[in-house]
Structures are given as structure tokens and as C-alpha cells.
Length: 483
Ligand code: GLU
Image (cartoon, rainbow, N blue to C red; front, top):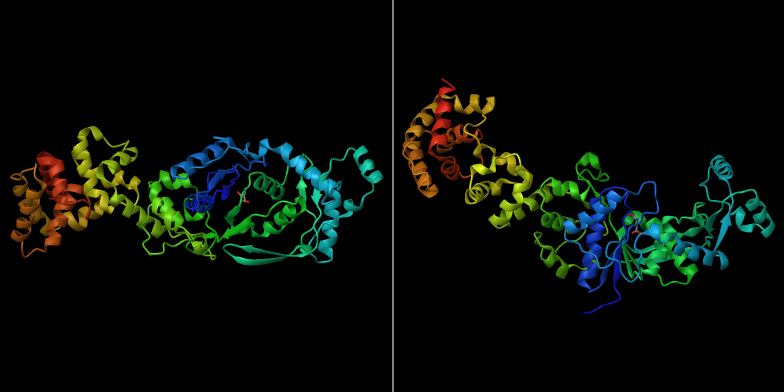
């Protein structure tokens, strides 16, 4: 059903690379908009000029695009309610602040930092929370003029009505607040820029945002925002606060647990489509329980009423599992193409495109991240192979393995290297012939001599791609190096 009035937004501050938490919030907003034929808006909240940087704005654009989230209005593409950067909207905030002053909902506050500090100290001594006394609210015109003459620059404070406030959160249910515990808070700073709680209301109202879907760390801001809506006589949007994302140890997800920015995950070799699938599972579960779901399918199944109100745990194991699954399901041309980025150091000219695909096909089932490809195919390059001491000592040097390798070098001289299936059959016969040695031990010796590893790609494919010369050479090396 068409529902044209649904308008949601993501409003990141460009003070760092796009965090996974913000990306998850963006995704849920985006899904809600796409599911309901609504609009998804990107607004850049850059009022903190000191901490905001242009490179982070770019990172926000790039990261959202990388995971397939497009926006209908935003700083780069404009829209009916432009500008979409808070730093370009200062005049609008001033006008709204003025309205609030005129209607008696806000007032100029001339208190100096020292005066406020003194108030805070008294509160501390009396062992109560500091709530601004509101002394400037009662100033007469003359007193105000006196301060102005002194050269003080005022802030504008919102005059908090003391009342019990309730709102119905779409995720968390009914939430109640006592606003008496919140003092009159600053809405415009002395440098004439707005604070977050004020700018966000002005922008959401001006931009006709119908639903505010964001992290639950903003619940405590909501009463202040609702009161500003009320004071300005504006329609209050619906709120939906998402549970936080926690690390597997249930603490706040931070750098100490690994990557936290979207671009870091993508650079590490997580496929964007797997990563966005994973993000969707942080608070939402597919009705059929099948977790591997492309974004296109998630759009149709997504239902905001089904979002969990409890924190979601960022399970790196699950992300790895999902990513491996996506890699295995990718068409081989596609995965080979994407793998090239991670193979800059490998001499790809040694193989044709077709052979490279065969190599990728042979190792892809063992990959968790695409970046692992460089390491997992390294033995396909160069004449010889690196074998570490442990493999040499525990596998290659044993008398049993030496016997296997001597026999195998005879077989390797006769194989048809164009035919992996044929090689596979011959290896089957070889294993039988080597009885009573265990087939596993036989193959470990062969594999270790050729690849320096105990597991990996289909060994028949490895032999085929290494070719006769290198196969013989590596087996021979494993024999002579240990005698
Ligand atoms: N700039 C705020 C943030 O990044 C936006 C919060 C909101 O959605 O209201 O947390």
C-alpha cells in the first residue's frame, strides 16, 4: 500500500568513519522507508565544527553506498527541504529560537562559566544533582541591558515545564519521564550555533520526518525534544528506539573488539551484501528463521513491530559464517573479479583468467573473508613452496611420508596434467596401493610436499594447476631436503 507520508532519516555527525551502529540504524530506517514506499533522507549533523571533517562526510556517503543504501534527499543530491547540512541551516535555527523567546518558551541566559560553576559547587555540597537555577529567566529588561553593555554574549535556554511526560515508543513501548529533573537547557550557544536537541527538532519538523528511528542512547533526549515540538506547536513524530549493539562479551562494542567502522569490514574482505545481511539481523529476525537473506528479500519481510527491544550482540562468528556462505554462493566469475583486489602482490600473469578461476574455485569453500585469498592460494605461485619447520618435522620427515613421496614421484611422472578428474582417480588407486598406510596420512604427505599445508584446495586441482614440472620438483625437494 502506498504511504507517501512516511519520511525517515539518518543524521550522522561527521566526526568519524561511519560506525556499524549508525549503519544498522541507517539500514532499519532505509528498510522502513522502502517497505512502506516512503522517503529516506540523509542529513549531516555537523554543528560541532571543531570535530566535523569533510573526509568523514565522504566516508559516510561511501559506506552507505557500499552496503547498498541509497537516499532520496541529502546534501549531495539536494531535495525539497535543502540544505541537508546543519552548518548551512544556522539562520533557520536562529529564527526558531527567536520564536521560542518571543512566546516565552525560551530566554537569554547571561550566566558566565564562573557563575555556573559556583551553582554546580553548591549543588555538589548539598549532594544533589545540578539543575540550572533559572535565575536569568526572571531578569528584567534593565538587567538584561546591563549584561549586554558589559559585553557578555548570551546563550538561549529552553524553559522546561515541570511535568510528567509519556510517549509511546514503537520498539520500547510506553516510556515515562519526569522533566522536573531536567533543568532549563541551552538551545543556542553563545556563538549562535544550535545544540543537538534543538537543531534535531527544527530539522526533523522542517523536513517533515514522520518516524524517528535511532539508537536507544537517544531515549533520554526524547523528552526535551518532545517539549520543544510542543512549544513550537509542531506535530510530534513517532519514535522508535533500537536496542544497543553489544560486543560478544556484552560490553559496549569498541575498537578493542576489532573493526567498528563499515569501511574497515569491507576492506578486510567482508562482502558488502553479507555485511548488510548481518546488520539486519542485529535486532530483527526473519519470520522463516532463514538468516541468509539478500537485502531485496529483507525489504519485503521487514516489519518494524518485530524489532527486538533488547540489545543485539555483534557475533563475529556469525558474520564470518554468513560471509563464507555468501562467498561460496557467488558465481565464480564474480568472486574471481572481486578477489583481484586482494591479489595485487601475487604474480597473476602466471595464469590465464580461466586458470585463475579454477584456483579460486578450488579454495573458495575454505574462505571466511575474501582478503584471505592471497594467503590461501600463495602456493600456486613460484617454483618452490615454503614449508615451515613444524610441517617438515612432523609430516615430511617421517619414514612413512618419505616412502609415500618416493612412490608418488613415480606416479607424478606419468599423470595427465590436463585432467583433474583423471588425476583424482589415479590418486584413489595410489591410496589403495599404499595400504596399510592410512589414506589420510598418504594424502597429508603429498599435500604437504606440494602446498606446505595439511589442508586446502582439492589436491587433484592443485596438481593439475601446478603442472608436471613443479609437482615433480616440489616432491623431489621434499625428499632430498629431509635425507
Ligand atoms: N547526530 C546524532 C547522532 O549521530 C543524531 C541522533 C538522532 O538520530 O536524533 O547520534
